[in-house]
Amino acid sequence: MKAVIMAGGFGKRLQKLSGDKPKPMVEICGRPVLEYQIENLRRFGITDIIIVVHHLKDKIMRYFGDGSLLNVNISYYEEDKPLGTAGALFRIKDRLTDDFLLINGDLIFSVDFSRMIDFHRKNNALATLFVHPNSHPYDSELVVCNKENIVTDWFKSDGHGNHANCVNAGIHILSKKVLDNVPTQEKLNLRADVLEPIIPTGRIFAYRSAEYVKDMGTSDRLRHVTADVEKGIVHGKRADKKQKAIFLDRDGTINKYKGYVTSPNQLELIKGAAEAVKRINKSGYLAIVVTNQPSIAMGRMTYAVLDEIHAKLDTLLGEEGAFVDALYFCPHHPDSGFEGEVSELKKKCDCRKPSGGMIRQAAADYNIDLSRSFMVGDSERDVLAGIDAGCTPIFLTGSDNTLNVQNVKKYKTLADFVKEEIN
Image 1 (cartoon, helix red, strand yellow):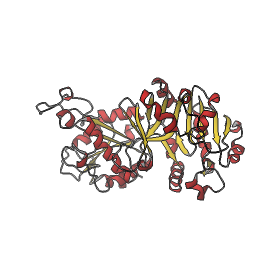
Image 2 (cartoon, rainbow, N blue to C red):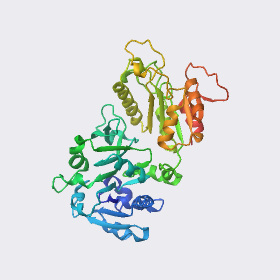
Image 3 (cartoon, rainbow, N blue to C red):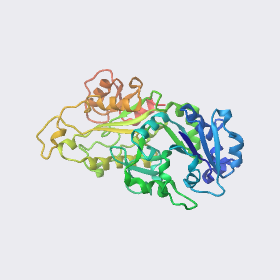
Image 4 (cartoon, rainbow, N blue to C red):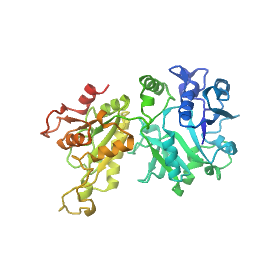
């Protein structure tokens, strides 16, 4: 599989720091961003690379040459004028493999591409988008997909309304077929001109991953990415490496406990919770919510309403620069007798806390070492779920709940736990 790296942009937001360098040549710990990208691609056997260049192109071409010094084969497409995020693809179509990677040139990433390629091929996708939550969803391209990970909508956030924090990260696998019906205008936008028109086919998929992918296109983001490289967080987040996680209960841990939350209007963050999650995001731990939601089985709430509640949770956290990497919920309830209950969900299960089933599922999905992970919650069932799954339980004492389990660390709030335990 070939890779195309889009490295022709002007990088206006970073020009005070980039100076006379194109944005992809800005150095992080002594090496340009593009070099990190190429090394990650090579690690997974992707050695045939086309770099699309325009602004200060000679600096890129002189540095990398034909790629032989990095044990890859590099060729170039030189834009005479900016062609947008996809204009060059139409012009290099004959140089592409049937499926190819398309990567934004301002990203620092550590991705196990073998997994993403397997996902793409398994689904016979025309396009696969690498998606993840990020710390600024309010100014990002948001992707909406169904439970089969088929993309149903894709739009640029305007900062209004509640939306799930599912962001296009700038890494794509595309079939060359997506270019067959592309308009031949000079400048093309990947989302609007190439991919949005084929969303109705049901063959654009979202590949969800908690691996490290961040753009360095502003001075603040460059500073954060540099710190992550220095700390080893970037390479440590790759999916083929064992992860560590902080599993979080929802009600009473992140948002205020108000009994059964059955409407987005009831959701209100606990003071300091978003900042605590933000610190988890920066620490190298995954932040994963595991929550019992028996209101679905009881007939008090639908899956669609739960999605709205979690979209509001994502939005409130995102407004403060925080996000959860994944969220698991159990819709079951073992007891019957509720008016309007959903009979097929009235059962005993392995996912409902105090069982550790949700935690074990997340560990399988994200390659998590549970012995290096925590379960944080405000009830005894959270503690027991953590123990059952094999991670360290933390009990929050800010609620009125009692704990009958010995030798469990206690903190008043999530913020107190993070401040003390997470560096």
